Length: 217
Ligand code: 5RP
Ligand code: MG
Image (cartoon, rainbow, N blue to C red; front, side, top):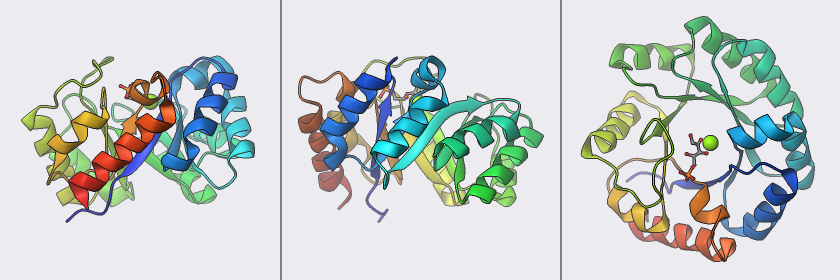
């Protein structure tokens, strides 16, 4: 069976104080910290740097969604302390390659967010370039929390894992969503609003871990 999936907290908030508070509250129950796209835009790489300083041992993703300027943007994120950086699947192959080269230099990885119209052939090419992680977002915009994942999306995760990728699933996932992924080889579940907006973020993060344990272990 699949290794136990990790839980990634997406900090899709606008200010560093809130991001730091939610991370402190939940740190004991999460595996990966995501500096969300909104936080990267509102606070810049300062947010990545500050979270790296505060959580020295954490795995930190900068969800900067690179589409061009792969080298320069990846340098900014890795220099600030990110371990992983996101690139959109629509990015030109040269951009993916440039970001990947910077990742290698820093001992990090890039995560490619799958785009509409991706092909199996393209995914094989990414793998052969050295890309190890793919993000599958259930929709193209903000999904309702607790919404159902389609069979097609589940099949896509299986296909990508068969090719050899570690696959991250995201988009409206709640603790109650996890059991539907039984037998689906997800490597990382991302939760944003379900944890950050919960009355008790730590209890919610723990509920995710319990659901992961019950589904995968
Ligand atoms: C959206 C994102 C979010 O960070 C991620 O999908 C988590 O969001 P939520 O769990 O709140 O749906 O990158 O594109
Ligand atoms: Mg995100």
